[in-house]
Length: 128
Image (cartoon, rainbow, N blue to C red; front, side, top):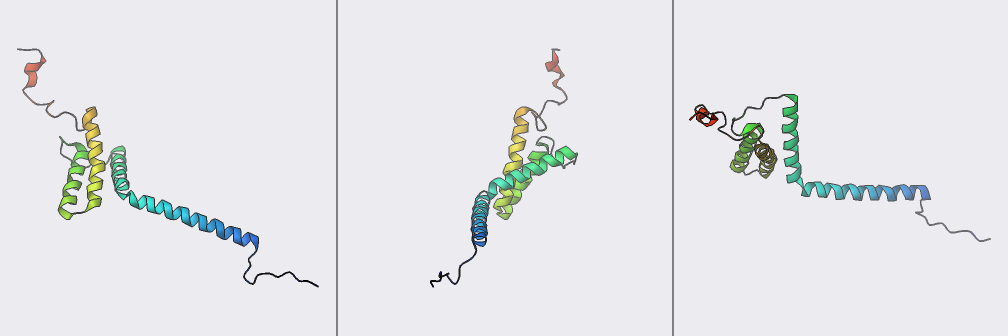
């Protein structure tokens, strides 16, 4: 009578399939984590832009310099802090804030063209 030899460490097929899927999920998650870490400067800029947008939408008044606008003031403050402390993350956050400020400046929004409301420019309204 012949007996079938079974390997001593053999696992049922269902367990082997689950272990294979678990390894695949771990490998994909590890690759996603590596990609996120390599783009941390982008994530810092996007996080800052999102936080400033949320502050503006909820009506939170960020102290600011009028000519720069809220985003410009925050961006300059973050950039200076990043330079002084030699912190790259703060400099990347400044990139996000200054990008929004430049966008607002270009479209004529919050940090629009300075000097439009100066006293004494009534001579340009047609009276000579």
